[in-house]
Image: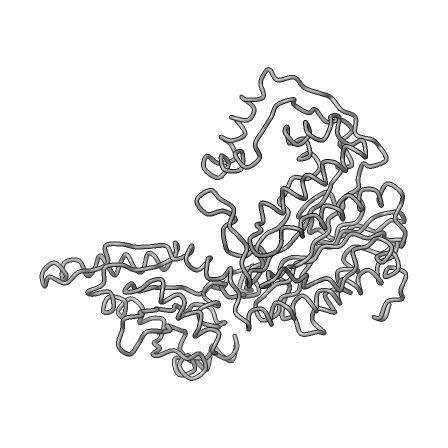
Length: 478
């Protein structure tokens, strides 16, 4: 349990003489008396390693003996017959290193006792906040009568925990490496297994069989298995179409291991051979993928990787005849966003889109050893997009993103439409040969002291190597 002890110590150093109340996830009803598969809240797991629902951790760094307290479901023989074993109060101490533990029903009473004399409490928004504020309200009259303070400051610990989670401990990196290794093997099997005439979900089944066989307890996120034009839907999850001869297949999927998720995307020809147009688009994306790695080491940043990828993608789009203007104008007017509309990467760890900011005080966050993230450029030419109307107006994508975050999508859209009024437009015909092609390439990267390590490099990205892997026979029974 040393890694969890270390993480709690890091968190305690930040909150100082405050007290933190961190809730676990709760079970969610799927239908009637059936629940969705339970998965622990990532920040709660980060601090405790405890995997049961309906629990709360209280971290009190200045308490003389009970700095880490767990409130958990008590042992209950009847419920355990139906729902599975519980650690209970005793197990919370013996197996999860809590200094003290109580039944979850005692939380309100214990909080009232522990909040007396405190001035600051850390609690994330949600149901735990209500419990804390109710305890403070109940204490207020007594505090006033006896001159003892109660917390006047309620602080959201999410930013603190997000920053801590960005820098991985050795045990976390070991889990992430295993998740990546499993995912590499599973993607390779999917590339061997896919062929014209079978359904997307059959390829998904072959891949996820490898996940489970290799010890992954669950997927890191719903698998995207998108054949042909379905690859132009970024979060396509229906996975029910038949694969056609001549289709590309885009698979974005990752195994979870030790609560850490891999995130890999590969795009490959279902029949084993890229068409000239498919290869042309693929090679542009691959060049952008490689360009992003130039900014993946210490001192680099995710925004710098994105800018490098965008420059290469835009040049490629112009060369392919998919943009009406030159490279400089297409960049300045963000015309590339018609075919590349997402970021080039994100943090990776306990969550597939892991906690952490890309910028601090408006400046890109510099990468440090121990940080992990994805690199995932792509191009998507919608199958039904015969013409595109481009506006000849210089834009700042970062400014537009900030506006969306501050004002919301509806108001941002209104302002953008207002700005575009009266601007010259270009109606551009999208070359038919490229319509319906969607390509994304994604790898998982660790920042090291002297550079970076591609944790998923064992899965080929070179188009010739991809075709060679597709030509291999499946290793699972057909």
